Image: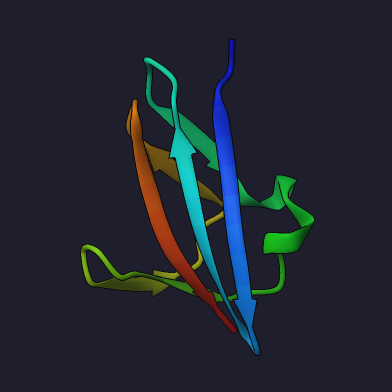
Length: 72
């Protein structure tokens, strides 16, 4: 069974998104599958302090989370 969750909050032209992977295996997320995550051209990972151009796919390790800030 796929156990996965997205929680997001928006402020002006930015969106903070928390991906929770409750699965036993790593997951790859296609951001284009989520219309509320479209329209942003880069993202920032505040935990690892990495900013990069937006990728269509994000990898989340098993039983972990990924916090990103989408920016336009």
